[in-house]
Structures are given as structure tokens and as C-alpha cells.
Image (cartoon, rainbow over all chains, first blue to last red; front, top):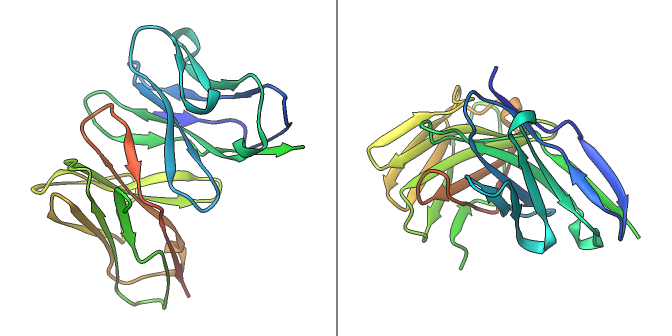
Length: 113
Length: 112
């Protein structure tokens, strides 16, 4: 079945540590790929997106993500996490020719001082 | 003012009641979406619309209906609310395929 998978439901890191959030998709063609962040009590905000070209994309708030076609993955990274990064993170795909934006189940990030 | 406005922000309703959630946007976008968010399930697409005359069912449309009254307005209705429709509902808009979606702040609906 076509899907977007975020295998980590909850991740806890210390402030200043590096972060990697995983996302895998299972679609025939490479979809358009996004990462969104949801702060407590807020709507979702776009962090970054990948359509084509350079497989390493930079986003806001110091985040980056790398597309790996061979692994059908689009993992989100940050070299040094800040306490304000505590939030829920969603990977999403926009499937070519369907124009539907489909989300993964999310990863909740907790940051300890 | 917010680009995407949802009303109400919170609502408690009784089983069997009809309820409408409203969404309006000032982005000038053609595409509008309704999602529901449940813990552990992420956001699931209920309905989406690419223009006023185009309405499409998403993954979980049963028990819901929508109305696109204008380019800027997209309403979600629960004709007869049931407790398992208790969730956080989000409206979103986008300009076209593969562009950023803009989200409202959500409507927390509780059906008792």
C-alpha cells in the first residue's frame, strides 16, 4: 500500500545534541516531499521541501533534509537542537498527478536542557 | 489577521447534532483541504477542493460533507456527530500542486 512512514513516535534529545528524524515513503514515482512542524497549540508550518535537483535541501530554523532515492527516504536533520525545537514533526508527500498532500503519523520531539 | 482562519476554535457538541466548521482564507489560493488529527495517526485527509466546482473525497470522508461557497471559503459539516469524530480539525490552502500548504490554527471538536 502507498504510505508515508515515520518510524519514531517520540524522540528525546538533550539541548545541543544532533537530531535526525526519519521518513520513508512507498510510492512508485518520486513524490514531492515536505517536512512540517507543529508547535503546541498551533497549526503546521513548512520547514522545507524537495522537488528535484540537489538531494540535500536547507530549510528554516537550521533544519536540513536529505532525499535518498535508493532508500525512499527523506530524513530531517539538525546539527544542534535548541529547546524551542520541541514540537511535533510531520513528513508529507504530494503525489504527482494526484495533487493530494498525505502526511505521516508524526514524531514528537522532546528537548531536555 | 491570519491567512487561514478557522471557526470555531473549540466546540463541544452532543451525539447526533449537526455541526459545521468553517474555514476562510485570504491567500487567494484555489486549493483548500480539510484534515483531522488524532494522536498517533497524524493528519488524515477528509476532503479537498481545487476550485469552487471541484470537490473530492479524501481518505476518511464517511460521516462528513463539505461546501465550497467561494474561492475563499470551505466548510466542513458533520451531519450527525458521533464520539469517534472527536479530534482536532485543520483547514489548509495551497496555490497549486507541490507548493507550500498554509494551515489554520485548528478546531478542537469534542463529541459527547
